[in-house]
Image (cartoon, rainbow, N blue to C red; front, side, top):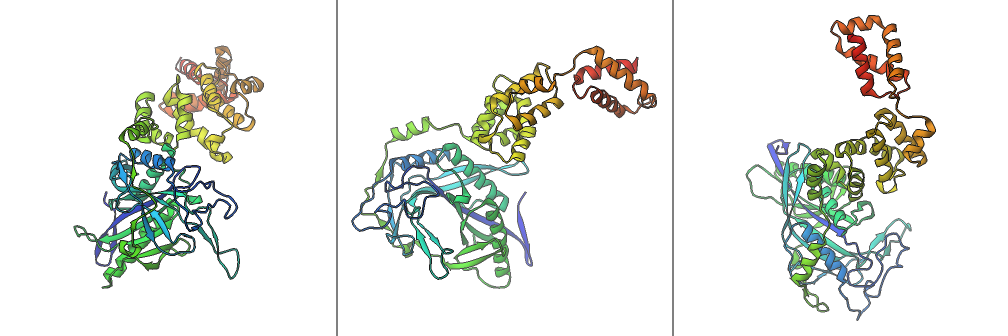
Length: 484
């Protein structure tokens, strides 16, 4: 379904392109040996190159190049065997060199594509224009002193991948889906951790509006949006602002804007610079970057299984639904956990317990799956107890809850609490006789056509056996006794 916004003059369409800045996972920076660890004391991870000392020569980080190529391959993009670094000249307090080393005309990765899935189940392909490597800038701190600003250069020189999409996005939902999918791919590849709250992934959002069938109108760029929720909010707010400008007879100026989520508005920062404003020229200290096709092939051969491939395999191999497989492959650790449990077991049953009670327990305890007190072996052990009839589903819920509290093995809990399922037909028959005798009026109503009352009898027998009776046996015995 086409997403549109209504203005005073009719229907408008949103056009969005995203520039994602993803911090490369590497131990050192793009052109220096300084550490990239997050959270260090200010200015403790700064080399002479990062600080802009004269005469310091940059040396390309081999692993950062490999990470960019892996990302390009994961995006099904063209890898350019020859690329080049340029100097993007501008002055800012957190950029000591007075220029940023970036790739402008010759990026390391060319066009690619990302498939997104929307809430109605439909899919769309969003084009990727390019991916290039560049240095990050430092960070200004404005809240340390009432009269002065401070600069922390720990982040200066950290390798970034700037991933530029085509203007193919047509709604806030599509933008959110694209960002989530891109984050998922990067995390699977191990090329960026995707922690938007730490600034290691952020987005510049280019927004314009147009009437149906029109060519593109002027766009505005919203800088450094650091959450998916804020990206979707900013798109709608900025689009409505532009619609109001056009409909009032004004003209939208191409400019850079800031999104203020507190006020629910975008504000002008500066007029949009063109490439010539930055005086790009090839960096004289760096030769063109040339990589061998054989190296690219080797990197491709060792790529992990990507989310879309894993999702399709889970559906085929374990017989689970597209929805469940989508939930389970959302994070690599989650998918690995599921597969560890599902191997040799019922894949549907495993998926139902993981996406239901297991995830609910993780949420309740505030733990990520990597921190779960119930490992794959223990969850699998609990499922085995259900399968072999030691416990039923209701008892299993109690066992799982106790496992989260104590970390005990499932069989230990069953034995300690006396939770073994009652399969003794004599005990179940005695309970059934008692319930039937005490509820003759309901028996008559059930036999008279009120089929739903059968659930009442099952529930009463389960209650009488403290939930330990085998539900299948209870059903059989009750049917025989009531129907004679």
